[in-house]
Length: 236
Image (cartoon, rainbow, N blue to C red; front, top):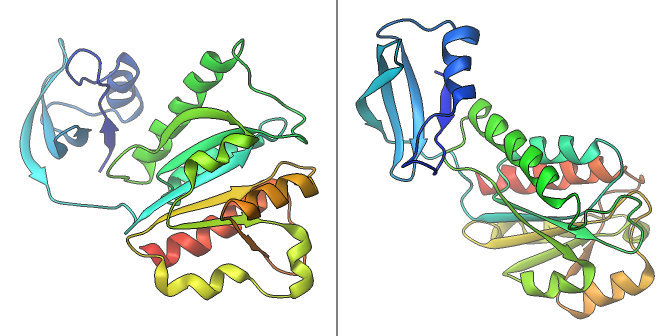
């Protein structure tokens, strides 16, 4: 069943792109059904008019596809199109919120000049990924911060993926699996060049737990997928 998240503007409504997708891509006809998600929940609806496009609510859908807890990804901005992919997959895997970070080794930067345009594209990716993966709510992407501001996001459990921890040959996060549900969990992952020693020390001194993702060095985006998948599995 196709699902659409309604926009808050104009009292929660389908966008023109949504209507185009329903009629031209999905080729829905009179009395065909789809799902909508608004501030009151998920609803099964059916088409009652094509021109103008109208639908009616059939019933409320009692469903919750979100994690049992709150998973926040703090991600240092990578270069190229990697960020688009990470946002999409983080959404599919159940991440509740993504906070983007301008850190010392970020090649790409998001500043006030390009912030709004990029956020618009990222939020479109989130909407489409949420609809495809049957999320019950949209992932949040609202902040772009400097590295020093990670202290504002200290919560129940805070992990920083650090390649030098692989020398310990264990994945530290596995020690906390019994504590994951119903907690707010932060995972902090660096850009292509990793974290500086000063950044690692800063995170550790502010309550972040250094964790290994195994013996091999992972790409920035792979580290995201690996850690998110592990945590979300145990938070489902």
